[in-house]
Image 1 (tube, helix red, strand yellow):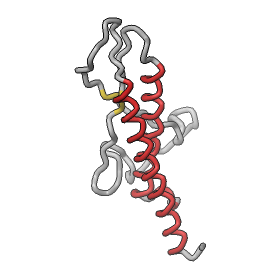
Image 2 (cartoon, one colour; image 1 turned 180 degrees about the horizontal axis):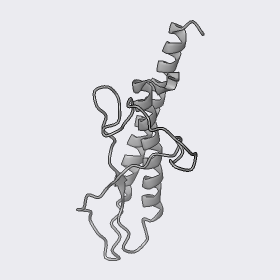
Image 3 (spheres, one colour; image 1 turned 60 degrees about the vertical axis):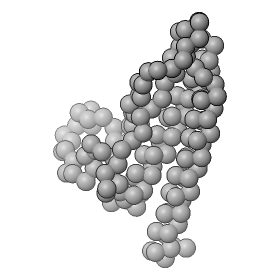
Length: 135
């Protein structure tokens, strides 16, 4: 098992990937703030169990045997996160429901949360390096 496959580190890595994808979605919302009939989107936050594994993931189970490289998808494929489809946005006469103030607040909160996750990830790696004597 690679050191980055530890449950705590994989949870932080999944959280960082979620923040990157959310930043993309929020940027699309802001870019389309004047597009008629555009509805803002957001991502649902990933859930983790108490072991640090994403809820519903199969990590830690025995992998299927591959008889051909074309049978299964590549192991490093990018994760997909479900969209949060909550309604209730205020809509302008043109049909656009993007509120720039709310979107900018989400962007700044997302940026701070991403910075916190990257700090935790790098400090965890440094702690593990210290523990095995590589520092």
